[in-house]
Length: 159
Image 1 (tube, helix red, strand yellow):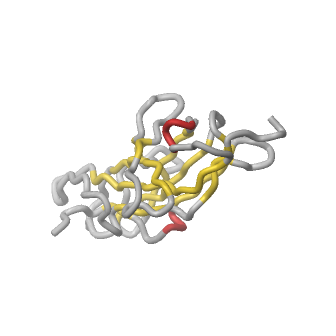
Image 2 (image 1 turned 30 degrees about the vertical axis):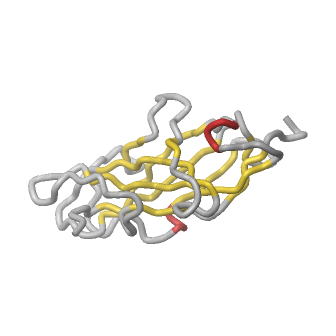
């Protein structure tokens, strides 16, 4: 039984957006990834973070998850923070966690012109006096969530 209290309500909690003008996701170019982390069951506000991973099409039957590190911090984890800076997520509310990932061909297993995959988000409960700190197993919905499938291209003619 998972003791996690922070998680996701569905794939719509994860957004993937290229920083390029044509919005194509391209190797060696920034991809902004945002995950809404929900307080699913802790009756008191609790801090949390999200770990981000790239997963190939067909995961978990095919391939394995690969950390998607932030371009600035080098970490694949980000705190969930409210627009005003609050860290403790109240019950039944959600705060965004965000990274800017710059994927490499080696990270995503690119051997041709493009590769399909998704982002795996793992909700990490920070814990408080009432609810425990927990990093859930992978996969363990609703505490982990896979985004919709998207394509990362080898190059972009506009760049």
